[in-house]
Length: 147
Image (cartoon, rainbow, N blue to C red; front, top):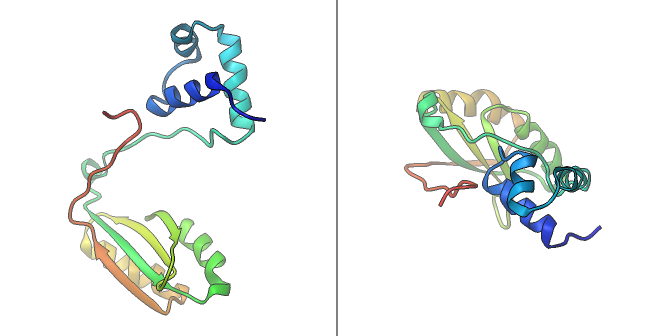
């Protein structure tokens, strides 16, 4: 089913603040809470809303090492490798990219030593042909709801 202006407004509001209550949204849009509840439920069922999450300050949790890892693997093994990577707690994102290497993933660890241990213990056994690690020195992120 297609989305109308009300659906799009609800999606933008929730993307900006996932903690908004149905009542808050209804009040701001001058609609009944039941209308908003039904719309949100439908958007979830249609998988336009995939979930709700909390953004955590990783540095305050002593997660001080972040790396982007480029890794090459046989094309027929890509799906299995992507699933294996996503099952690892230290991996937050996996992307299939153009060119060589074929995969890129983001890894977080408490420090560089833990990052190296993770790469040796958990990434090396996956059978990648080539692994290129880029340490993240600094980053700027646009978080939902931020200005």
